[in-house]
Image (tube, rainbow, N blue to C red; front, side, top):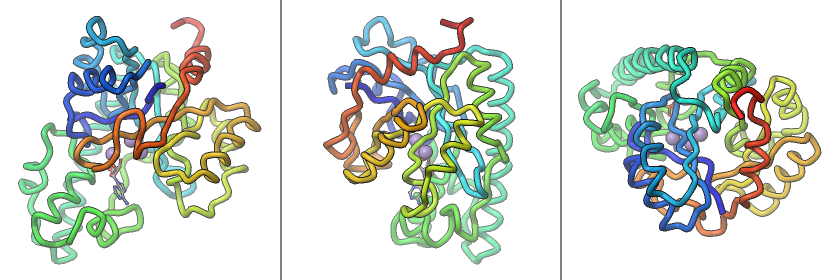
Length: 282
Ligand code: AMP
Ligand code: MN
Ligand code: MN
Ligand code: MN
C-alpha cells in the first residue's frame, strides 16, 4: 500500500517531515509522497529520513492552477527539489502567495472582519500561509463558527474574500514538472466544481495539456465516484494515482495511507508512475 499525497508544516499540515516519514513506516506503507502546496521547503528534511525509513520517500509538490475559471490542483511526483529552474518558479509562487494573503486580509477588513495579518500569521508554523490558516484565524477571531463555516462564508473558491494565486495553467504546471524530472497528476478531480460535473471532455483536455495521471483513489470519494475515476483513467490511458491528502490535525479523522479507513492505493501505481519519468532523469 502506498500514499502519494500528504502535507507537512511547510504548507498546511501539522506534522513535521520527519514525523510523516515515521508515520509512513508505522502505517506499513511501501511509499509516501510529500506534496506540500506550492513549496519545496519540506523536501530536504523529508528525503534525509530515507536511510532509516523503510518506506520509499517520494519528493512531490501540489501546484495551484486555474482551469475553467476555477482552482485545480496538480501534483508533481518524483520532482528534483534541487532543479534550479523549478526552484526559481516556485520562489516566484511563494512571493505571489505573500501578496495574495495580504490582499485577502484587506478583503476581509473591507467585509467588516477586523482581522489582522498578525492574527493569521500567528497560526502558521512557517511563512507558507494558506487558507487553512485563515480559516483557523477567522474562527479564533469569532468571525466564523468552524473552519468549514469560514470557507463557506468568506474564503472558499466562490467566497467574497477569496483571492486566487497566480494564474498557472495545467499545461505550464505539467511542463514545469516534466522539466524537473517529475510526473504530473490531476489532484482530487472529484473535488473540482460540483459533484455532477462530467469529467470526460475536461480530463481529455488535461491529458492533451500534458497531465499523466489522475487521483482515482481519494478518501472523499464514494464507491461510484471511485469506480468512475478508475474507469476514466483506464479509458484515457492515464495512471490512476491516489493518496490520503493527509493534513494531520487540520483534517481530523483522516489517516496516512487509509484516509478515513477504506483507502488503499496499490503498489503497482508507483511503478507505473515511475515508468513515465522523463528519460534523462531515470
Ligand atoms: P490556498 O493554497 O492558500 O488557496 O489554500 C488551499 C487549501 O485550503 C486547500 O489545500 C485545502 O486544504 C483548504 N481548502 C480549500 N477549500 C476548502 C474548503 N471548502 N473546505 C476546507 N478546506 C478547504
Ligand atoms: Mn491543503
Ligand atoms: Mn488539493
Ligand atoms: Mn493536498
